[in-house]
Image 1: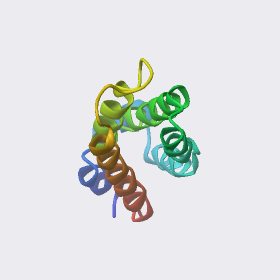
Image 2: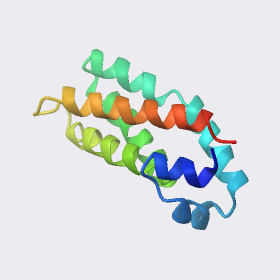
Image 3: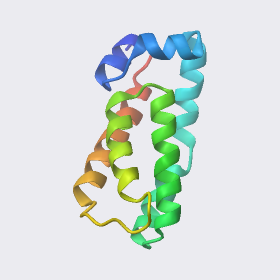
Amino acid sequence: MTLQDFYLTVGGNYTEVIDRLLDEQRVLKYLRRFKTTPDYDEMLQAIEAEDWETAFRSSHSIKGMALNLCLGNLAKSSSELCETMRHGAPTVDIAPLLDDMKEKYQEALDQIEKID
């Protein structure tokens, strides 16, 4: 899969990420780093423990990485989840938002593996 195909698959913006990071090799470098960050696991553990400050911080990091790497689907879902925890314990049921984010996160990881 080409990098352009990857961005189509994950609802991202290839042109924007190239404008931001300047070349495909740099984009690939950061996509591979994205796969190794502990933020996702930390967020899940913090949500389970109802540690909303840590959950917010971790989800905010994921949102930032997704936005910087122009991972459209993940950026949208992580942003929605993140904002529910911005001021502490969510006042809405986050289960559907968390499920959507898990799906988009896994999709991004799976598709990163397919890039040539």
